[in-house]
Structure formats: C-alpha cells, structure tokens
Image 1: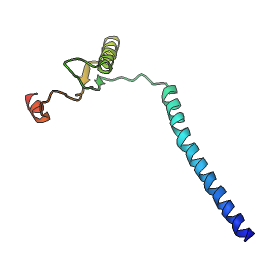
Image 2: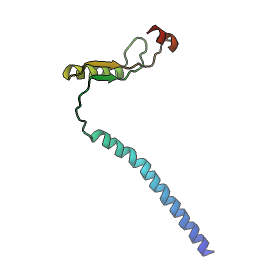
Image 3: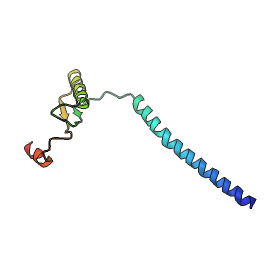
Image 4: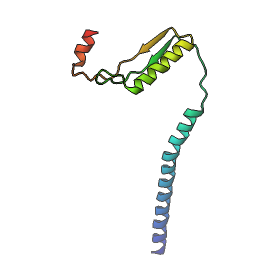
Length: 105
C-alpha cells in the first residue's frame, strides 16, 4: 500500500515535470525566435524589383499601413538600384463581386 502510494506520487511528479518542460518550451521558443529575427543582420543583395504587399482600402482612403509600405518602397526605389515596384492587391470593400473586378482589370 505504501509502495503504491509512492508510485502514484512519483507518476504525478513525472507528469508535472513533463508539463513544466513543455510549457517552458512553448513559452521560450517565441521569445528566442523574436530575438533572432530582430538581431540578424540582413545582407544587401542585388534585386530588380521591390514587392509591396497590399492592404484593404475603405472609403477611397489609403490605410496608414499601406501608406507606410508605399513610402518605404519609394524611398528604397529612389535610393537604390531597383527598376520596378510591384504592388500586390489588397482586400476590396466596394460591394462589387471579385469576378467583376478581375474582368474589369
């Protein structure tokens, strides 16, 4: 009886230890990844184009996120040897079906 209780206590401690280790890994990994992403030096490489990811426009206004992306792209274009700026599409909020928009373009 004492041996069974001791075994159950050891199993509980083992499970608690595993959960603690797993929780530690889950919490530490994002911090390490974030630190790595912001400490790695980017090497300047030759490229022909700048790709700007789009963002939704509402009420015929450019969202501040998109404006910041476009301003950065223009600065890079003017100060480096890029030949093109490629703009991707963003979400369209016009009430017009996507099919009609694609056909119009």
